[in-house]
Length: 135
Image (tube, rainbow, N blue to C red; front, side, top):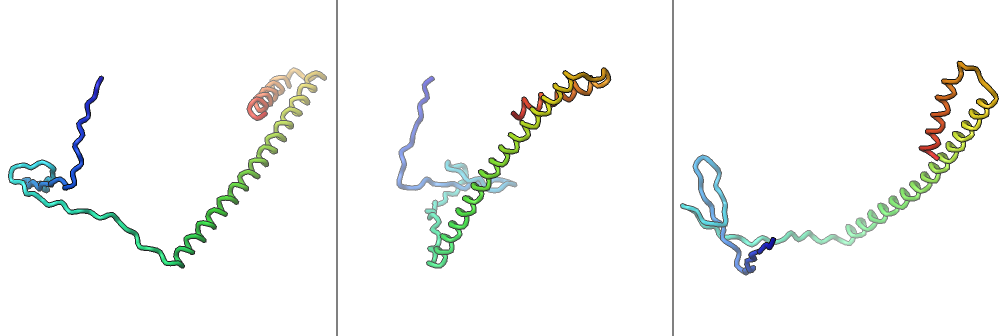
């Protein structure tokens, strides 16, 4: 498919705006004239120019930015140390699960009552699932 885009050249003169009165409705503003339209002269809109800051305000803003930057750095350090702690805790939990599974397998090899079988099966399945998820 081929699309043709018609571009209007940018003109230095602003486009006219027309105010079209309507019955029982607010007026309609349009770029094309309508019957009984009133042409409005477009006004140039100036951009917003913020007031300049005093030296004291500039210094206060600079200090605020520095405090926020320091706070951000402190949060990064805290996150890194907490992630190290989490990894260490996960590793320790993984070792505990593996040791518990070895102890359970050892218990099974030594022998157990038939009534204990469902409970031991359930424990083994839980430990294997924990090891699969966390190790």
